[in-house]
Length: 271
Image (cartoon, rainbow, N blue to C red):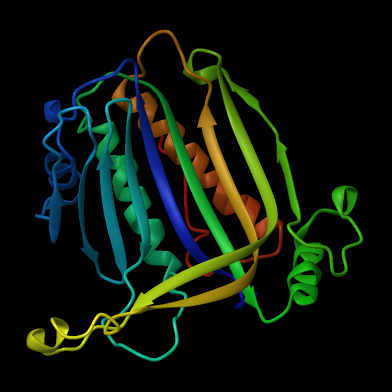
């Protein structure tokens, strides 16, 4: 189904207890994962406030956000600098590159680049198929929901259906993993600011640069894979193994649902 694209992906690390963001800033974390400087870095004066670093990775925008209790690595479409009269929804066109970046993160985790003590890791991936009408959104959703769960949708609004199929992983100290799948009808809003290229003009009347709001209807399939918090901190190899396990499961499940995202199905577990 070429209509399906990746909207965004996220890997999250949860710390055992609150830690000051100054102990490991978003700038340092970004450099450790991507071995390069970000395009931008924002650090709050308050050491308990989050810091953020972001930069382009080919067609992707990578953002690292470090909070006292968690660290998020977000991946989304980088978009373009071209300005136009109508907002556009940026989707990740190259799912293969996304898979490479997610695998890069899991490999780096195994090398211990996260210095904080972690008791939980999570992987989130969202796929969408943009449609012009709600009827088409619901029809698309019905085509990918398994027979045993499939409702008879027509013009209903705000549809959400979520299930969890937890499993116990005996090779990681009987750790319990949540494998959450969510099918939903989404209304995605995009705000575009049109600014003049001439800096002098930008200082003109207040109406210059007024936001333009765009709204897109989409069928959505998202996966949220995470482990139940453990008392003993996870080792770097365990963190990497859990994330790659989740990535493999997401790749297999999207194919089972019939999305068949090209480039996203070549994930294998670490030995």
